[in-house]
Image (cartoon, rainbow, N blue to C red; front, side, top):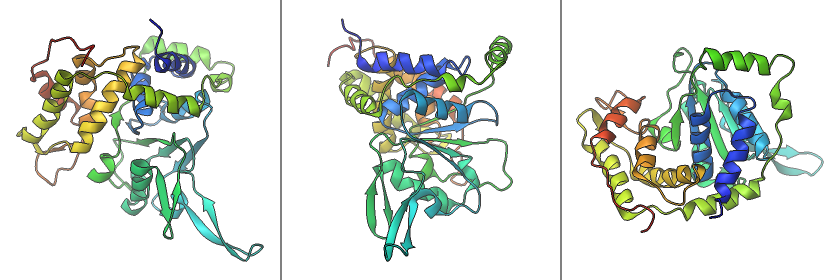
Length: 318
């Protein structure tokens, strides 16, 4: 049987990323899952764990444009989306594109910006467009946001509101490498950064083709029901004051299809669903009272999903 185009592309992209990131195969799988599914990723981890490097390397591997925004309290919405300015030579207003007009956007330390500036990304992430002075402008079809935030810093930060968190398909942690992996990293960087050796192994047009292929991955009725039971269980769990939204259900389904494609399968298994559940739903639920806010509920979701009966029928056909 001929291998899925998405699986072949994922293997080539991972090979390039693994040149600069050591021991992060699962994180890379999940980032590619969100990318292939048309979603966005929030990376929450300490500085220096490779979040920026991951975004930059991915952009090189897919031959896409890459832009970075350093979010700060004085950043304005126009600094993100772009502005209309008066051009004296043309005697009229001209639109200057902001960093969102890129294939891959790194929103670094997104929680350092004010809620007003954070919200300037909402339309971009959900609808692939920006509206400036009443005029709508389309973003690249493969627009993909990788946002980062430091979980330990609170001074000068503004927690992401639930509406913003819900736009991220997945929330992940990169984590530290183990001793052997960090030793390997030192050897790779001994003479020069391996980032310079990263080559483009596919194009943004290929990514569009992959996203179409992902939509054709089989997700059998019993697997869809299993997925929905997990989502609906978050709305009934006593530990959570608000469960995952219907938007979560659709994102969960698409991500499950994408993970199956990344792993080289033409069908989704319950294991795919169960594996992704914490990263798809953990940031979309509100734990405790309504004032507690959304947080890292990965373990809660993992326990909740383990209590749902797993279907055992044939998953290859609908």
